Image (tube, rainbow, N blue to C red; front, side, top):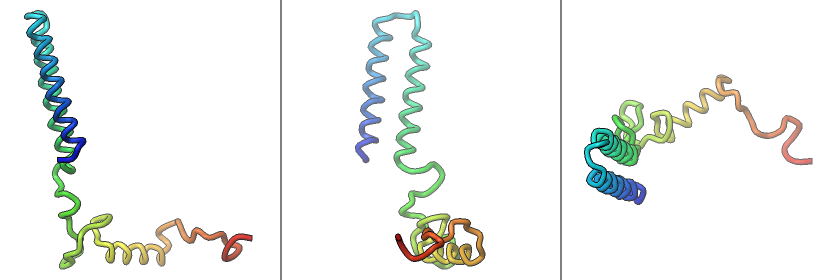
Length: 112
């Protein structure tokens, strides 16, 4: 478990203990509000833990494969492996789809 996930889990636990202590000392006056706060802290803790574990509904990035049929290479960008991504970039550059072009100044090879 990543260090941040452990920290969030410990923070959530600590907050719940403190809120429980306040409820015990305060009495019935604000128990409903404090219970709602406890539920919200638990929900937030679970959401953070899920986010730290990876994006919801998607496999972790190390598991994702290239979206080109039959290609077993791992995903790098835009659903493609490094080879297919470079092929798409090359085709876009040739077609003039990407507006970037060369980073060199138009006047020559280098400085001066």
